Amino acid sequence: MNLDQRFPGLDDLRAKARARLPRFVWEYLDSATGREATQARNRRCLDRIGLMPAILGGPQEVNLSTTLFGTRLPRPFGIAPVGMSGLIWPDAEGHLARHAAATQIPYGLSTVASQSPEDLAPHLGEQGWFQMYPPKDEGIRKDMLARARAAGFKVLVLTVDVPVASRRERQVRSGLTQPPRLTPRLLAQVAMRPTWALGMARQHRGDGGMPHMRTLDKYIEGAASALSSTAHIGYLLRTAPDWDYLQWLRDHWEGPLVVKGVLDARDAPRLEAAGVDAIWISNHAGRQFDAAPAPIEVLEEMRAATGLPLILDSGIEGGLDILRAMALGADFVMLGRAWHYALAALGAAGPAHLHDILSKDLSANMGQLGIGTLAELRDLKRLHLD
Ligand SMILES: Cc1cc2nc3c(=O)[nH]c(=O)nc-3n(C[C@H](O)[C@H](O)[C@H](O)COP(=O)(O)O)c2cc1C
Image (cartoon, rainbow, N blue to C red; front, side, top):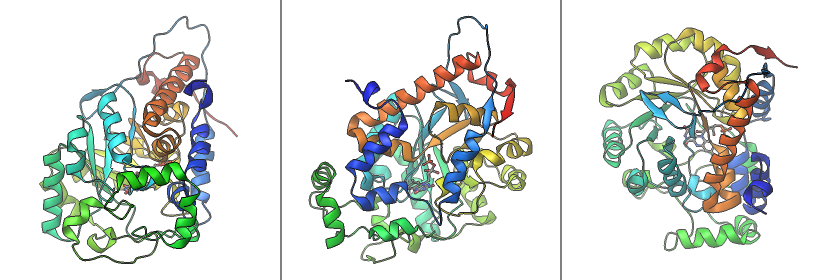
């Protein structure tokens, strides 16, 4: 049986990933904050968006390309930044960066990923995006930007929905610490997942068998700490940014600057005035605040408030969700967990299979809608489903 038959959808990859990951890793990847109402809301709100199918349109050629920052991209989706990606699967950052380069989709590297801009430089394509958690210290800030630039990252993403660490109760219950320490409890979980364990041991030979936040190494020499499961070492370095901080970044970064984690359309004009190049509507997959709206709920208001490109994520599970977002005004869509479910389920073959699932789902649903291009989505009749 080929991958298509065994894993036709994201749910299949998610189930397989769960079976292959130690519990604390699974909880890190899959959990949200609080009662996880926001995570559930993301799905519910997407399902409520209906699009009227078309009939008698004749044969259609489907084109999945779109334009962002003046560049034609072959697909309307990319890879959102995920901190400690390498804890989820060995060399996750490398696998995802290479996949993104090969398929010309954006790849977002987190400040708190387990590989640094320098590690990824040889693997980056033209669509490397560096996501910044804002360092307090101006020297570190300048150095980080210089490193991202030198490594070949073209787009800077400032994440603004993490002013403080959130509480993720499932993560805490699983026994995860930051930095991850192999306590007897975690070791027992690891022992039950040999593929993950062997891969990690091989990848992090001589490094305690566990990944860490390599971008921060040079700034935190000797500052090893035992923080809570969500307040990692990055919090020692970072600050909660304000509008002046954003202006500073704008003045020091020449390429496209994206602000990620925006939900309030009232912020759009000020972001536009600050010289931001795109707004990334996100509730961080429900991981930060459990009374946040779903990005898809605020999208139309945001679209009306600004002419800037809008990027959307949080809870996107397939091609149809991407079409829903684009029909309501998004220019581009990102996925975070999905790529990691795919990696954990299938290893190196995961990202390409997810890319294939998303592409086929986009094409099949565009066929139902009778459209050949993504630009036609905005003219479709939209429905509010129960
Ligand atoms: C395990 C995990 C770690 C994340 N780490 C970061 C991060 O370091 N920086 C950031 O801006 N967003 C981070 N995010 C949020 C993602 O960039 C993205 O907004 C979110 O995953 C999108 O929702 P989805 O997973 O439903 O696709 C993280 C998400 C997950 C699941």
